[in-house]
Amino acid sequence: MDGSHIAEIPGSSARRWPARASRVPFWVYTDEAIYTRELERIFDGPHWSYLGMEAEIPQVGDYRLTGVGERSIIMVRSDDDTITAFENKCAHRGARFCRHKRGNATEFACPYHQWVYTLEGELQGVPFRRGVKRKGGMPRDFDPASNGLRKLRIAREGGLVFGTFSEATPDFRDYLGPRMWEHFSRVYNGRELKVLGYNRQHIPANWKLMMENIKDSYHPGLLHAFFSTFGLFRADQESAVEMDDIGRHGILISRKGEKEANEVSSSIRSFDAELELEDERMLDYDHEWPTPQTVGMITVFPSVILQQQVNSISTRQILPRGADGFDFIWTHIGYADDTPEMTERRLRQANLFGPAGLVSADDGEIIEFSQEAFASAPEGESLIEMGGHDIGNTDYMITETAIRGMYAYYREVMGL
Amino acid sequence: MSGALSTNVDKPQLRMASRDVRADVQAFYDEYIALLDDGEFDAWPDLFTKECFYRITTRENAEAGYDLSLICAESAGMLRDRVRALDKTMMFGPRSYRRFLSGLRVFYDNGGIQTRGNLLVIETLVDKPSQVAFCGRFEDKLICEGGNHLLEKRLIVLDTEMIPNSLIYPL
Image (tube, rainbow over all chains, first blue to last red; front, side, top):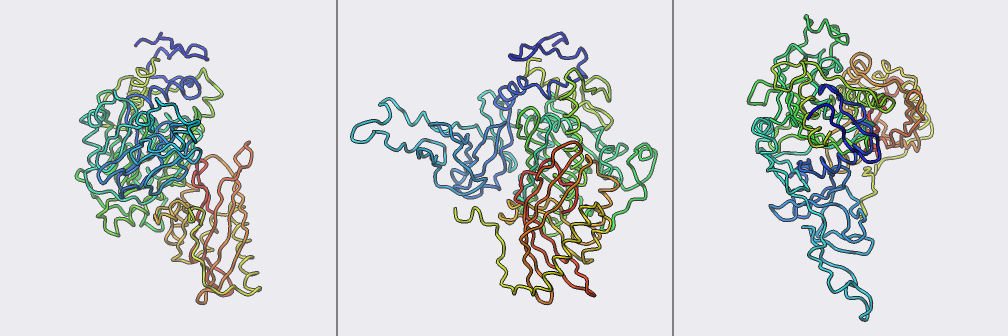
């Protein structure tokens, strides 16, 4: 694809990608027509979106609301070993009928005209389908079997549940690719998961900025002074950035060190060698992983970040809400066979993450700052040249290669 | 759906405090709020006992019995660590919070005090309109030491499950 390609975006002026691939034009974060195309080609397209966890719906009839793009999705345990997911949109007049985030049901009914669906999403009942006293009712050719709820294909791996509307989406393991599958199954290794709770935040920034943030290995030791100060994530630590062969998924890998002042910390303005924690239980780390790495931050394009940072494990689901905002849903987890001490450790370390996180609050704030500038300067470009112009795996942090990887794939899907 | 709107409050089988005690406790909260609204966070942990428990969570977690918090501290030291991080390591846009407490109820509890009430927080960012950022309730335990009240436990359960970007300052 050359830099002169001009996309025909209805309703907006022609959009020309900058000549250098290592630049991202600000309009990809603000243009409504681009955003509509993202919903069609990315979220409704051949990609797996994160729906939730098997552990959230253990009993038959257990359901929870989740989402794909802007669509509301019901994920339900429809049989002992079957999970079904369908759009929360009545086949009759389209009402978003399920209003509870979670529950247990034997069937789903739309309150408007009481159309009833099975746990598999099949249309089971239409009141007055034959009319009353032979008057009215649905036409003879109305076929309930072809008027169920709109279902998603499901992939279940390591306790997580993914869904896709597209028949073209490859099997989940092929979608991740062998390298990312290996990283994925390091945490999601078949041990039963246990939900510790949820945090939800609306971030007034384009959804791609959160994907970029977690692919951006350059920022953690700089923006997050808490990380660098306490040695959790710093540029001089053993680290790596890896991607699948297409560049859409990525992982930042690191190995924590100790609190120390050295050549690297002295070039971090925000580093404070004097800083100590009064109650150190928050950083009490127990190495529970098969390899020396202590951090694995995975981005599964387009919808989820799989966090393992010391003993804190979470999924962070991205639900876009217009070009200029997204809902960010954190599900913190442990393993079902964790000791009480390990559960306490994970809950304590959760103070670093989420909307009030000593580390993560920084991210929501900074990408809001970015979005504000993009909205006012559509001619602008983001510069992503740390580590050069190429896309490839690295054994160092000071690179933006994984962001370049995502945009190479993004341009292909979007025709930009 | 009888339980759907319940806020899951343990209905305290406790005796309502006297008018004088209530007035003292109200005065304590007035001071607590004034201190936070004025941004005097360094002094905030001193309003807690050494081994205090402080937690902000959402109704979603509280009702499901999940222990995850937005903020959780198991000692005054952890509260001071959060204040230190606010001051030294966290990055956020400048803002002010103004906290509004209503419906205060005060009960006797084994020589100490339990309270219940509502909390509303208005957030104002630079050049932005003020907005209701957080709405919820609290369930606290206080002890009285040398005529001064100290918080032994403060639990805030937010109805606001979708946080408007960040929760920066203590509530």
